[in-house]
Structures are given as structure tokens and as C-alpha cells.
Length: 503
Ligand code: BG6
Image (tube, rainbow, N blue to C red):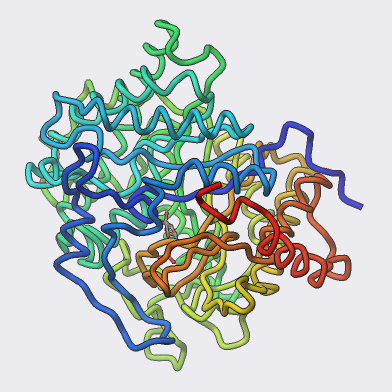
């Protein structure tokens, strides 16, 4: 029998500003790279198809107007954390110096309402979205990014520091840089390997800059002395296609160097791995790398690792390219051609072909702990699905299964000595998903995008999470009472005032 989660464990949900906030031109905000991207690449596939949808994020889930209502719903779930990034274009709409008071006040109000409902905001400084002025000046692949990011972090620590003691510098530098710089999947759609390595460099240095500002904010009393600053990474642990094949095993090592070391070593250990220096030489980028940057990075390492665990990666060596195996269909996402992601037939996948393998969460958490020796937190974990709404609510037993299986692995890892301090699932409510738009549902709480009312409604999974939090544990499969969660959601929808935004 697994020991329960500790009483101070953080049970949280995560989401992201451009995916739910809306209010694009309200409160002094101006456009960001994501506004431009979604406007220019608007694409709605036929209904019910698991393809990429790029829809308008002008209003999204209207969190801009509904954050108080959402804080009450979060309280009903019982969470004590909410991970969210502050929209940079709302705070610095025009340039790196003039901050928008209205923008920062908005987040003060959001954070206050969370605190009033017993919830700790877990702010993330950068989640893939740059103000348009910054993108036009070179964005994350330019030195301009560094000072702009310093100013951005500084004001956030100063004004929002009193509401929380856990912060993260960035979300998924890995999927961000691969899909935005190696590929043209996400903004700024560069498809340029040299720009990719520049972005990796500046993002890594920006982590150290944020830590420097964080420490100064502590000295000034803006942030509490015991506050911690981490980095959030979406490591996909490599599993060999054939565990007895030396080339597949070698490919896994290479994959991990590019997928793990490249993104965590700089800000956790203060050093870049070899593959970074090889690329610097190959692309003639040695002038970019300054001694003072490297010294800062060494001095200002971060305090914890946020891990976005959705799926591991089954890796094959390139020698198999002629074999009849299903390959990842977007090789543009890959940093190295020496390791390839494959989709063996006998595995479980979501409709969007994301591998489901919960056991690697606990297995691989030992690697993170042994290698970096810092506390861990799951910062994203969830399943994108075509939900079906009936009688006003969604019965999402599949989501309960997915989340519960993963949470059990967190509990198991803690029992084995891995210091997880929290679990923040993806996501609180339905969102605009970069790979599936509004059709790919992730939330514990639904948002009525279909009738465009954007009203919130419960799903069974919301009551599963409430039960977990009350009991401080995940459940064995045969203990899961799906009917109970469904009935609670139904009853709540009919009687609880939280579903009416005017209450
Ligand atoms: C992470 C991102 O990559 O995965 C989120 O931080 C994203 O922004 C989530 O929504 C799930 O990905 P997707 O494309 O299915 O929404």
C-alpha cells in the first residue's frame, strides 16, 4: 500500500495565458507573436477530425473577464495551486521600458482572487509568447531578448512576489524552440537551424538573468526569503525500440542528450552539454557566447524542476528507416537525425497519437532526481480528447483513468524517495490547444465554446480530483467510482451557484 501524499503537497492545475485569457486589445494590451500567428494561419478542419485547428484566440475562454468565477470553481475542486504565465504583451505592450500599469494591476487582481480562495499562484514567466515588438526585433533568438526579459521579470517579482513563493522561468523551451525554430509549426516559424541554437542560448541565459533578479527581489523583500524559482521542461524519456539492440540504445542516449541535457543542464548545472558546443562550431556562433553570460549561468542555477510529463518517446536508430514501422510524421521537430521517434502498434495512444505510458513517470523521475538533485513537480500532465457533452456536463471516465494512472506514479515515486513537491495537471479548463485548437479538450472544467457562451460546466474528472485531494491519494483502478463522480458533477451543475457567472 502506497503512503499518502504529504499534507503540504501542492495539488494544482496549470494553464497558459494565450490559451485561455482573451482580452487581446483590452487593458492597454497589444498584439503578441501568437495573435499574429493565429490570425495569419487560421485553419479549421472538418468537425470531429483529430487534426490541427488554428482558431482565433481573441476571446479564448475569456479568463480576462472570468478569473474571479474561475477562482471559485478552483476552490470547489479544492486545489491549492494554479500555474499560469503572465502575458508579456499585456505588461510591456510597446517596448522593453514602459510597462503598462493596467496590465500589472490585472495580474495583481488575479493573484489576489486566487489567494482569497486558498490558492497559491504558480507564475511562469515565459510560455512561448513574446510581444510583437520584441518578436520583430529578433525575439528569443536575439540578444535583445535578454534585457527585455530582465525588465519583465523584475517588475513581476516586485509586484507579484507577495502572492506566492514558487515561480518558474519558462515553459518547455524544448517544444517551443523545436517547433518555432527548427520547424514552422509555431511562431515565429523560422525553420532555421542557426536561429534555433541562438534561441537555446538566449533562453538559457535568460533563466540565469531571472534568477539574478529573483535574488535581488529577495534582498529587497519583494519575494519571500524561502521562495524558489524553477524551470519547466517537457522531457520525453527515451525508451529503446528494441532494448537488446545496441544501435537503438545508442540512439536513446543521443536523444536524451538533445532532449534532456540541452534543456536542463544549463540552468540546473550551469553548463551546456557537448552537443551545444558542436552546434556553435558548426554554425559559426562563437561570437554569441560571452564569458560573462557563462559565468552568470554557472552562478545562478535554479532551484527546482517542473516536469511536463505527457509521454515518453520510443526511439529507434536511423538504421531502421527502411523498416515497416510508423515514424513520427514531422521530422522537422527533431534536433538530431541520429534518433527517431516511432509509434509501435501494440502501444496505447490518444486520438492525437500521443503515447500513453504512465509508468515512465516514476521510472524516469529517478533519473531527474539523481542527475540534478533538486525537488521536482509535475507541471503539466493531461489528455486531449473529443469530449461529448450531455445533460449539460461531460462524463470523462477516460480522463479520470489517464490522470489517476499518472498520479499513482507520482505517489509511487515519492514512496521510492523522489522529492515531488506537487502535481499540476493540464488543465483547469478547456483551452485553445496549439495542436488541436478548441476541439482538443483538456479541462477538468468545460467551457462552452460550441454555443459561444463560454460558460463553465463540470466534468466527472473535476470530482475525481476533488476526491483525490480530500483523500491525499490516487486510487487503484477498482476503487474508482465513476458513477459517483458523474452524479456529483450532474448535481453540482443543477444546484451549485458557481456555474452561474453572475453569482
Ligand atoms: C504543452 C504546452 O506542450 O502541452 C501547452 O505547454 C499545451 O501549452 C500542452 O497546450 C498540450 O499540447 P497540445 O498541443 O495538445 O495543446
